[in-house]
Length: 164
Ligand code: HEC
Image 1 (tube, protein in one colour):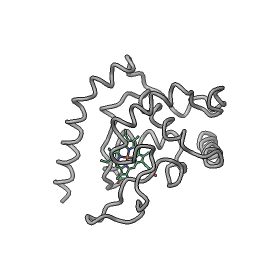
Image 2 (cartoon, helix red, strand yellow):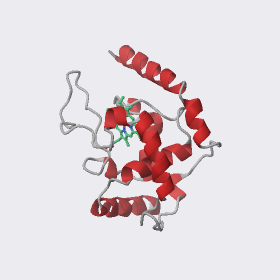
Image 3 (cartoon, helix red, strand yellow):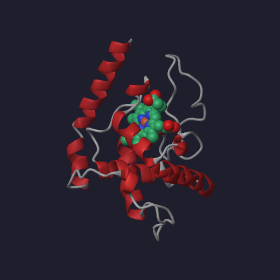
């Protein structure tokens, strides 16, 4: 079972790697971004840490790589808490109705880079497919669905995480 899982993940990574050339043209550099130091002050367009253009770019990344599992608008499926026939959790919503808002940026970025494998999960890893900028943009894209109260609760956690 474990071997099958690994093969599947490898297959997914390889077939996606074929598309990464396209994605790389969106941002020309693969600059490392330390998300613990991105500014949290409200951006004029959004009132949040991210800009409108980041959300726009991120939605393209999301549509290409994430929406097949997490839903077109990050809503996933209503029954995301029920284990599937193989005993795995289905992809959760990322739109503020589930758990994602409990995580600071650094954890969100790590989950996207490493996928679910380190925790025995099913999500593919994206660290070799997406640039840091694309990962930051895709986080902005699903955060843009979060209602203000959820965003505020997340921001408090993000600040607390940085103060540690
Ligand atoms: C093949 C299906 C699949 C694809 C494609 C996928 N994910 Fe996931 N994702 C999952 C599953 C399943 C989980 C739950 C944890 C696990 O099993 O690994 C998850 C968990 C997550 C989490 C953690 C959520 C939480 O509540 O803690 C984030 C963040 C996330 N995915 C972002 C993304 C992003 C961004 C993309 C696109 C770059 C993406 N995922 C593509 C299946 C997928």
